[in-house]
Structures are given as structure tokens and as C-alpha cells.
Amino acid sequence: MSSLLIATVSILALNYFVIDPIAETSADDEAALLVLSAQTWVELPPEARPYFELELAQNHDLIVGAEVRERPASELEQPYIDLLEEKLSQRLQEPVSLLEGDDLVWVNVPMGGHLLQIGFSPARRDIQPLYVAIIIIGLGAGIVFATSLLIVQRVTRPLVEVAERAETFRGGEDFESLPERGPRELVSLARNFNTMAREIATLLSNRTTLLAGISHDLRTPLTRMRLALELLPDDVDADLVARIERNLVAMEELINDALRFARGTTEVPQEVELRSFVADVVGSFDPEIPFDGQGPEARHWVAPGALQRVLVNLVSNGLQHGDSVRVHLQGRDVHILDSGPGIPPEHREQVFQPFYRLDSARRAATGGSGLGLAIVQQLCQAHGWRVEIDDGPGGGTDVCLSL
Image (tube, rainbow, N blue to C red):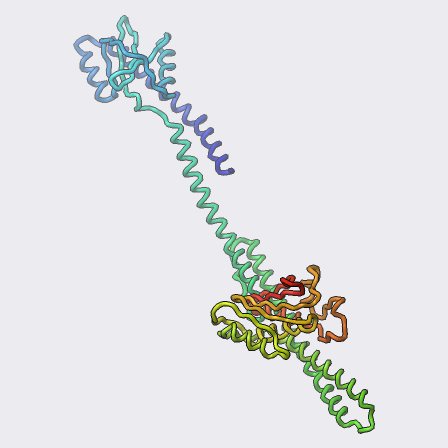
């Protein structure tokens, strides 16, 4: 719209300040030439007039003669012809009508007692404002389009690169910094993004080191406690010993989950047969869990250790909160369906946060450290997978893992 408006203003300005003045001057000059030719013809002796007529025909494309023929009025709808007619009337001080015939435009010029008929080409000085408008709009639109395309590409290419890097950034220290080039604002954006990525990578690395260090150091006192428990005298209350053993097992499981949560992002993908792999993981549970894998066997690149941990955590979570679990593989999507109470839509994002539990899950019978789904979410983000929670087809929960 803006380029069209610019072209329209340009055409109007060109027409008003250039085309119209030039056309008016040209028409006035040609009217003066016609009148001057008639005056010169009248003033020449009769024997010189044929040479003058030949000179005008050869050099000025004007046909001058004293023989006046009956010709029809001109029907040419050209702005210049109308303007020329107006200028001739002004110079001869009487109305003048242009005639048409023999592919020429004719005008009867009374001069010095003679009536001369002068013919000239109708197209030799015709103006074409429509063609001027088409050229300006066409070329102008092309120039605006090409220039806009270059500007947009210069701006959007760095933005697309920022978007792609941001989508693939998983907080690892192997992040490749964005090139800081382009317009000033994009350079500032790339610099700030690189700084943010480095700070996030450092923060996650420090968190991993801290969690791994604390979890590792806690193993030593746990081992001592187990050793002390084994060395207790036989007359110690057996129920007390059993409770302490259960607490030690729970603490060790919590430490193991914390270690998995801190470390589980660095595994290298490998090519595996997905259906066989998922079937093996599901088959390791007791009691047996129904598995349905549709479609032919296909090999995919996945991190097998991370995928196994994700599947085990999701199936175990379904077993804790439902009476039955079944697994369904469709293409690259793994569905874990349970018959539990389900997860309300407003909680389906929060359940992937560490130590977040629904009220219905705060039962001692369910156990768990509160890190299972958090580990699932972290591993999925690290390997570019997606995990979503929806309602099951027959009630319960459908957790879909998209690889």
C-alpha cells in the first residue's frame, strides 16, 4: 500500500510538473510552426513555393498545399491533438477544427487571403501517460519488493538462527554461540542470548555437581548405618531393625533418584529397533504388562539408557496410581495408559516439577521420591523428546512419549 501510494504521488507530480508543461509547450511550438509555415508559403513567390513544400515534407513531415479538400473532422481521442487544436485557435484568433484523412491530421489555415491545408502525422508527438504510470508502478513495485526482500532477509536470518539455537538449547556446556552480526539490535540480542546461555549452562553444571556431590557423600554415612545395623545384638527389637532398614532403603532410593536427576543428559544416541526395545523394557516388569506395538519394525536413533529410564519411570508411576497399566506403540509415539484416577488438566504441567505431588498421591502406599516425573521431563528435554498427559480412552491417564 505504501509503495502504491508513493507511485501514485510520483505519477501525479510527474504529470502536473513535467508532462503537462512539456506537452503544452510542444503543442504551442507545433502550432507556431504550422502558422509560420503558412506565413512563409504565402510570402514566397509562386515559383519557389514547390521547393518550400518539398523542404517541409522532407525535414519536418509537414504537407502544405493550397488545394483544400473536403475531409471529415478528426475523431482522434488524444490529449495532445486537443491541446494542439486549442493552441492553433489562439494563434489564428478563430476557431480551428482538425480534420482527418490519408493517415494524417489536417488543419485549414487562413493566411494572407489564402486558405492552406497542412497535414502532419497524428502519432509523432502523442503522449502516453498511461504507459508512464504502468512503468512507474511496475518498476517501482519491483524495486520496493527487491529492496524489502533484502532488508527482511537481513533481519530475519539472524532471528531464524536465534530461534533454531534457542529451540535446540538444552542447557549443556557444548552450546555453540550465536554469531554477533547484523543490525545493532540483533547484535545486542545475540550477545545477550549467548550470555544467558552460558550462565544457564554454568548454573545447570553447578547444580549437577552439587547434587551429585551431596548424593555421593551421603552414601558413606548410609553405609556406616547399614554396617552398624548389621552389628546390633540379637536381643534388639526386630520391628525396630526392620523400620530402620526400610528407612535406609528409602533414603538410598532418594539418593539414586537425585543422582539420575543430576546426571541424565549426556548420553550419546544409538540406533535401536524401537518396538523390540520398548517390548524388552515393558517385559522386565512383574506382573506382566500388556504391550501392543503396531506397524513394521523400524530402527531409530535414541539414547537407550535415557529412554529406558523414562519408560521405567512412566510405567512405575502408572502402577503406583492405577490398578492396571498397558503400553501401546504407534510409530514413534509410546502411550502408557493406566486405570488410575487421572490427572486434572490444571496439574498436568506441575507434576513434572521435582517433589510436586497431587493431593490424591500423598499416600504412604504410593511411595516414591517425587523425582520420577521430573527425571522424565529433564531427559526428554535433553534429547528432544516430548511427553504429554491426556485423558485415557476408557478413563485414567494416557501419557504419550513422542520421540
